[in-house]
Image (cartoon, rainbow, N blue to C red):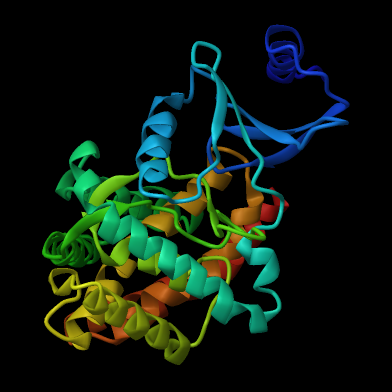
Length: 343
């Protein structure tokens, strides 16, 4: 089967840019329509080309956010060439080792997370003035994201219809999470700052990718993406240790305005926006299967659901919601995943 987009990309790189290359290899694909190809050259380091079909993706936000992050010293891929009309970018190659690969050996975690949290502090502290350049993570966005849960995870994947009482309870929980989220200090939010989007580098690590959906929003959000990662998990003791260290680093940077009144408030911020994120992700992972045919994300639903139940158990006002997820929703997931994979 011919790949028209790859043929166009190859023609652009070879003919329009005049690069002498040995071959083009698939580098990765993400949860959107974007694809990435590694450009192998005999006498020069490899490069990465992004293919973002214009009818589905606009490279404008990627270019904009790349410039913002680069301006504060975050190591994002340097952009060498742009063909915006065709949806092609030629960029620095940050290698093929995401954090997730290295974290399978858990002794690497302290050093890797130390680097990742230092880069995040740069994004949140040094980049705070850049929030004016980003759209807000406001109530409309927060609610739209959480609406993916009933539409895709509950109705489509689990095949359940909510009762009016269940719908009211879920609506009330969503309203609470919006209020909690908007009460947090506003910072530059990457929105997917996790182990698949952080690259291990010999220097100036981590390399940061997949940042084009950045918004100005709650300080806890990227911390959750990193420390309650949907692809790898850590004990609560480890997570809270990293959180406390991070909060202390904010205080050391004289940013008490970002650190909360005490550790308890900072951790609450983390857990509340984490619940919003994981409610959203349950819907996103289900949609990636039912709409886009990407079955691999089904394997990540159990951990994501565990995060939801765990967060609810930590706060009295969420206990009823947590029990509902645990007793009504969790038992249905294995059979739902089984039906999907058979299909």
